[in-house]
Image (tube, rainbow, N blue to C red):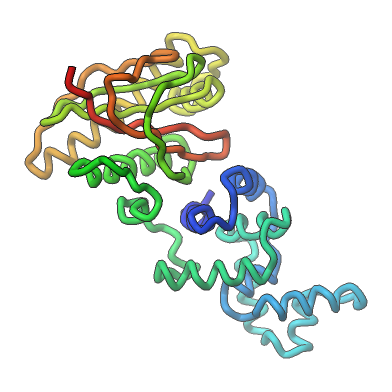
Length: 296
C-alpha cells in the first residue's frame, strides 16, 4: 500500500464515503488491480467523470481503445495520453481503481472525493511520501476526556503507525477511538507502562490471527501458534516503539523509564483509563491501546 492510499483511504473513511469493511476489502484488492486510464486522467485533472463515462459508453459500440477515443474527441492530446500511459504501472491509484471496480463509488463520486481531498490537504498526486503525524489524526481521534494527555496520545499514535509502516510493511488506517473498557477473554493484550508524571500505558489488543501475523513479520519466523516466541515478538515490537518514544522525549529534555512489557490473553484493564484505537491493515484490524494508570 502506498502512502497516498493510506491518506486517501483515511479521508474516505472519515467522510463516511466508505465503511471500514469496504476500505479493508479495497486495500486487499489494490495489490492485484490495474489502474485504468480514466481514473488516471481524472486524478490528473485531464478528464472529468462525465467525459470518462462518455468514452466508456462509446467503447461499447466501437472497437477502439480508451485513449484513441479520448484523442478523437479532443479530450486528450497525444502528449497527455503518453504521460498517462507512463504512469499506468504506478501503484499510487490502485485503491481508487479497486473502489470503482467494487462499485462502492461512482466515477463522479470518486472525482469529487479526489478534488476535495487534494484541496483540503493541499496535496497533488505526486506527493506520496508524506509522513504520518499527529496533525492528520486530529480530525479522526476525539479522545474526549483525555485533557492534557490528548496531544501526548496523538503523538504516540502517529509514532506507532509510522513504525507499523517501517517494521511490518503495512500502512495502517486509523478509525475513531472507543473507551478502553473490558477486553474479551479470547483477545491478547500486549502492554507496557511508560513511567512519567502520570504512568502511561500503551500496547495492542489483538485477535490470535493478527498477533501471529505481526509476530511472524517482526521475528521473520514461521510461527503457527501463540507460543513463547510469538509472545516475545509482540512484546519486543511494543518495546521497540516505546523505546523510540522515550528517545524522542529525551531529545526534548524529558526523561522516561520503561517497565517490562507483558502479553496476556484476556488481560484485566480495569486500572487503565484510556482508549482503544482501531488500526486497519491488509491482514485485519488491531487495536492500539493508549491510556493512563488509574490511581489505586
